[in-house]
Amino acid sequence: MTVFEASASAPVSAPEDALLALCTDLGAELPQAVRLQRLVDLLRAQFACGAVALLRLEDERLRPVAVNGLVSDALGRRFAVAQHPRLAAILARHEVTCFEHDSQLPDPYDGLLDTLIGEPLPVHDCMGVALHLEGRPWGVLTLDALVTGTFSAAARARLARSVPLVEAVIRVARLEQELRTLRMAATTPGAGLAGESGGPLARGAGEVEIVGESPALSRLLHELTVVAASELPVLLLGETGVGKELFARLLHQRSPRRTRPLVHVNCAALPESLAESELFGHVRGAFSGAVSDRPGRFEAAEGGTLFLDEVGELPLSVQAKLLRTLQNGEIQRLGADRPRSVDVRVVAATNRNLREQVASGAFRADLYHRLSVYPVPIPPLRERGNDVLLLAGRFLELNRARLGLRSLRLSPEAQAALRRYPWPGNVRELEHVISRAALKALSRGVDATAIVTLEPGLLDLEALETPRAAPRPGAAMLVQQALPATLRDAVDACQRQAVMAALAREGGNWAGAARVLEVDASNLHKLARRLGLKE
Ligand SMILES: Nc1ncnc2c1ncn2[C@@H]1O[C@H](COP(=O)(O)OP(=O)(O)OP(=O)(O)O)[C@@H](O)[C@H]1O
Image 1 (cartoon, rainbow, N blue to C red):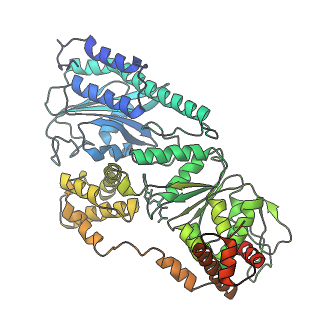
Image 2 (image 1 turned 180 degrees about the horizontal axis):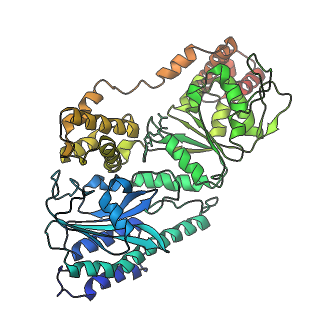
Image 3 (image 1 turned 180 degrees about the vertical axis):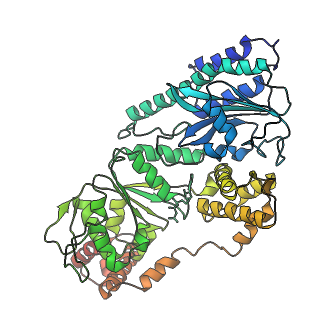
């Protein structure tokens, strides 16, 4: 590859040719991320500079989609335009904007250059240009050089000339992605065009923002996009703090129901006495205090999606009613004479092992089967590789802005510690670890105008690991079972457990289980149906 010398005598056609090749090598269809990465790699070499970043404008923030020369968490950071005057200046103009080495405007990459780990940026050159696609602002391209004078008038002119080609590469990357989505829609039954399946340019307008690019996350996003287009109920399975609620929102936003409501119900927060009326509504006089008719969450979600978070906590009495609604698409307000139809897609989530709950009698088997038509496991953070650093980058930038710091970053040792830690509390735990460490750094009297580097000592991950032994699975479940709401529920749970234990002992043979339990086989079948152990 020709390295472009930032001088007027450099061969003018070389950089343009290489960019042109990147636009036109359509024979080798490249994943978006790869094509964009090649673009910034090429530009860094051609302009012989310290860092290049391509950032996409989304909701008044700039999201890096490809970088070269910046720390690995940079891809997870989001730069609010209002907080970064250099980026705002670049975005506001149509021509190349240059910042001289003595510019007083703070640099968004202060402390983030990978060649100067944690060091303030020395006097340096910086230039950038706004990019447009189909006449609309798309984002910015920034270049930083540690050698002053690198960005001569000739280099600026060269960058200006490269802009249409850079925009063309982005357009090609987008078209390739659209092509892949169309192909997927054609080959995967039920997969519509509700959203793209991944890639750095993939986020739809107003969609929730998912940080990460690991293969595990890409697979998950692909699966969610496919199932979003269908009407199937979905069960999101994953440890605490993995992002189940976030992915439920994404699923809704990528589904044909996205213009209709998404209603969130936290089943763990529903007291049993109120759960039924909360979900299905009630009519006036249904119980003391029911002074008027009130629709429930199902009706509020009409035409849209009902997200049943922590569904494993739903009281057994309500489980039966939920099952009926899933079976016949009808709800009956508490105290009402007749049912009414509802058109609601149910997405549920749990961090419990529902199979175990079914086996222990805490969850109805028939409801489990209805809800888990399409189970989607959400990978824990420890299985998402480098995503932990990208997510850390996002939380670092949020805390930097919140605390008014010039720059907040991780030392290489702190990055390694984050990669090693098993994250039992997943993304939420990571968020708390970074926020706490940033505050601790401030309380130790660091200067807000300096670059604040978080070291492993501040993250204090060892302290978290020891007392937080893995939670005993099923502990909460035992509590729930020990405190059944009614005598009937307690008897049902006990009977379910006995039947499941006998079945397990007899290898699933009902006649054998009936013998063990010393009951008539037809009575056992009847009982099993009532308890929800059989369809
Ligand atoms: N890939 C991601 N990108 C950005 N933010 C994420 C990602 N995954 C999780 N988060 C963030 O992590 C936090 C926890 O996510 P969320 O509440 O959705 O987890 P959860 O699995 O529903 O937790 P719980 O099991 O406790 O209900 C939220 O602040 C969410 O925005």
